[in-house]
Length: 355
Ligand code: DAH
Image (cartoon, rainbow, N blue to C red):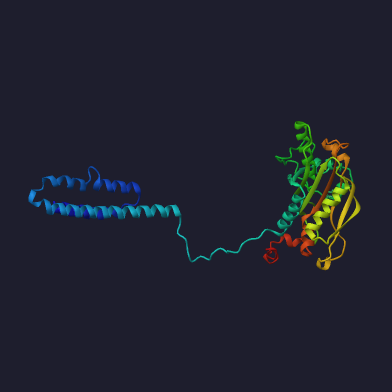
């Protein structure tokens, strides 16, 4: 009996080393303390031990039990540790250099765009969106620029290959898809959506949106031109929207953005989708080398009735104002940046200045 107990411990200790996972552990445990386990058998055998040997044997059996339980506990801990390690993946090399804990910043163009949109939100505008790949109709025709119109040359357009189909702009058989040259296309989409809502509810929902977005032109890149740039478009359609609204909205925007001393000036201009059309200039007293000079910052005007006709809004009942500005241009004026290419160079020395 004594020898049997000693070998139970020795065998357990020897076998424990080869246990590497949970099923192996369960089998190992069963071999010791399961119904047919060696320790279980030894406990059963106690009945046959002569009465006078019982106290000593009982003590030995108890010690054996304690030892076996310790081996089981150790083995289980080892199996659990291995399971955890497997979950954690490969060991971490603590000698590797750490990733920089420097916080990123939002890109200056993002900051400017958010500031512009924020001002118009305060003025009661909501944000609208449209695709960058656009149908020619939405980008040009609906905005009063038919294919032979000279204004179409004003913007050198990048076209999609004929084989391309976009989810959002299903190509009609004869239609070209282009990369939008301006966010004015969102005016058309917004008005079409409003007209669709009107067909359901009987009244035209309020249209007072700004549409920030990326635009593309076949421009040669230089200090003031980029083939890829950003605009914020504005559109307000309602009954009795006038030039006075246009001026007051834009004056409020300029004062919020460039300070209360900033002045605005409207110069007559031409856009195919507005009548009358203007370029708006600003003059700001404390803007470094650009102080006190008239600086052009956006195009604007009243929505041309023929644009309303194109989208199915009754131009006898409704009028509207529209404006469009370049985000890069505003950011350059705000920060005294003299080259548009800085925005796209990802040079941290430049970007860090906008933290
Ligand atoms: N879409 C014009 C451009 O890219 C900018 C513009 C001018 C937008 C006048 C307007 C507007 O909404 O009324 O040059």
